[in-house]
Length: 177
Ligand SMILES: O=P(O)(O)OC[C@@H](O)[C@H]1O[C@@H](OP(=O)(O)O)[C@@H](O)[C@@H](O)[C@@H]1O
Ligand SMILES: [Mg+2]
Ligand SMILES: [Zn+2]
Image 1: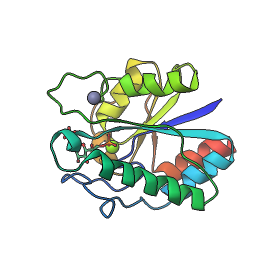
Image 2: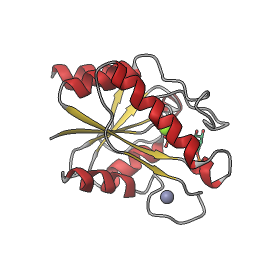
Image 3: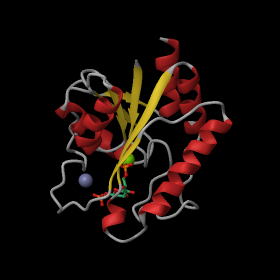
């Protein structure tokens, strides 16, 4: 199956150093909803793996996070597509969980859910931790320049990292090649 895994903040929607704390603050990046819908209509399953330490920090609750994801699903459905499994890590950086990126726990969860191998599966992110999580399980790390991506590009990236301007460019690449 054609499975693509996306980071959320900075890839699908605008990110903020103050966290995305409400549905009102959750604003899609230009072309991201259309890109997910086009991929979905082209036979791709689009899943999401997102760190949400704002839960552990008390900035917002699970109901609010679910409302953001319902918004994402609604917007993509309005374009004729659908969003697959959304997995999030609600933990803080000091809790030692297995799911917080750069650990690959969420990627493993998604691959197991769809019963597909992780090897060379594209994982698209804007932060170094996203790329490291991908590399840890032999996924293909893909950096977008949206969100924190421009800054991340200046760091030492995992060998073989692919770089695209945004999610729309990734959709064009995957659909037309
Ligand atoms: O990019 P994804 O994984 O979808 O989500 C990132 C968010 O959970 C937040 O992650 C935080 O990092 P810390 O969790 O505080 O280290 C900060 O980078 C925030 O700016 C950001 O909004
Ligand atoms: Mg991100
Ligand atoms: Zn976690």
